[in-house]
Amino acid sequence: MTDAHSTEDTGTVGYLLEMGALKRSKRTGWWIAGIKDPETIAEHSWRTAVIGAVLAMMEGADPAKVALLATFHDTQETRIGDIPWIGRRYITAASNETVTADQVADAHPSVADGINAIVHEYENSDSLEVLVAHDADKLDCMLQGLEYLQQGYSAAQEWVDSTRAKLKTPSAQQLANAAQGMSIAEWQRTYLR
Image 1 (cartoon, helix red, strand yellow):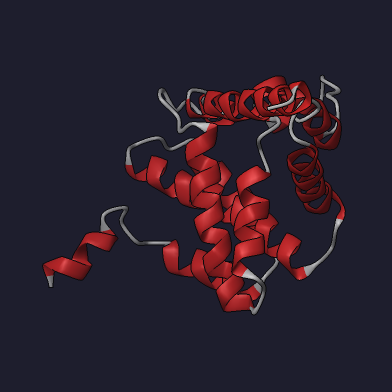
Image 2: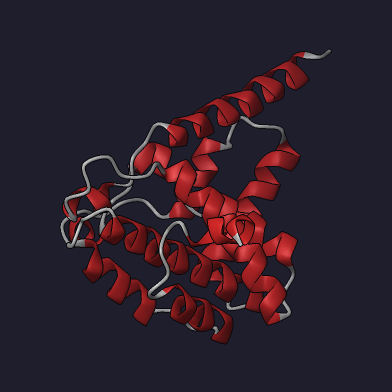
């Protein structure tokens, strides 16, 4: 193994270890809403990727591409944190593309190029896949808000309403409509029938 490969491998593994921090980092916007123990960024990203794949299937987009875009959409938060909307009024953070470039600077070139391209597309493209990935992010926030509402956090209603209003695809709007009034345990009825 050459030193260049060793350095690239170390840089790539460093990136993967950094992504592990997302499993420990809480979504701070929910703290503002009064949620005592909110979901982590990794939990949000995982369900956003699943929602994205489902929405892509419904919208005729590429499910794998949407899931990939959604997987990487908040990875920069290891460096800049989860800045809630209220905080963005007072803080100017580096762009997600700039953060990502720094995160993968020492990674294998094909890894760095691939991840940089994914983030660039998510941040700049108006393709159907990007539209669906953005809707998946919002739909997950809405669903999480509904779950928090059912756990007694009434302040989550504002999040439900504001994220729902931003949905653009017909499929995301249909699923949002279906989610209203469903209990968080509704899925269990599939085997309780």
